[in-house]
Image 1 (cartoon, one colour):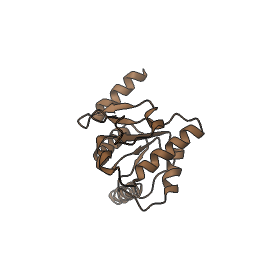
Image 2 (cartoon, rainbow, N blue to C red; image 1 turned 45 degrees about the vertical axis):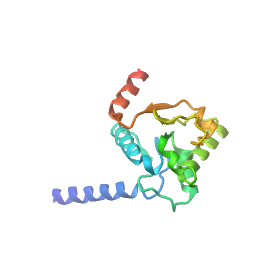
Image 3 (spheres, rainbow, N blue to C red; image 1 turned 90 degrees about the vertical axis):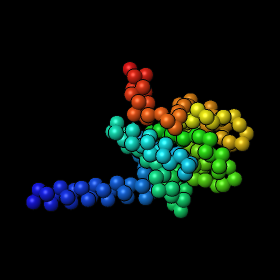
Image 4 (cartoon, rainbow, N blue to C red; image 1 turned 180 degrees about the vertical axis):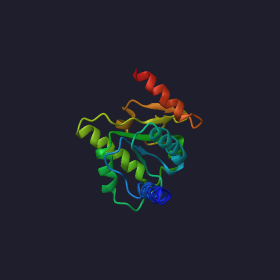
Length: 165
């Protein structure tokens, strides 16, 4: 009997975890915005932040057929909007991408509601001021954190906690 209960609970948790990424989630602690080429960085960051007990959402399934309103509602209700900025965004300059819409909307929310909830995570190899990259000026004004793809985000979390003390 106990084994049956455990099996059902486990299946339910697995199903809920899978469904979590079918639509953008509202009221998350952290909303990670990323290029499809940075999904590995987003996953590492997701794993690290969720291990700290934070509720985090990122576009794990590379959703592109979802209404922009779903993304906007999720961004509007997030406590932190964390765009990952790397040199890989250069590969998609001529392409309309979800993450550029996310940036634009997060900037609108930040400025219209006077919310300081955008924390860009910038790859150290990215020249933010290169004209080819086309990062919105208002996004560049946000205080950013830098990273390298080789960084251990678990170590990064410990450093962040130390800084807060």
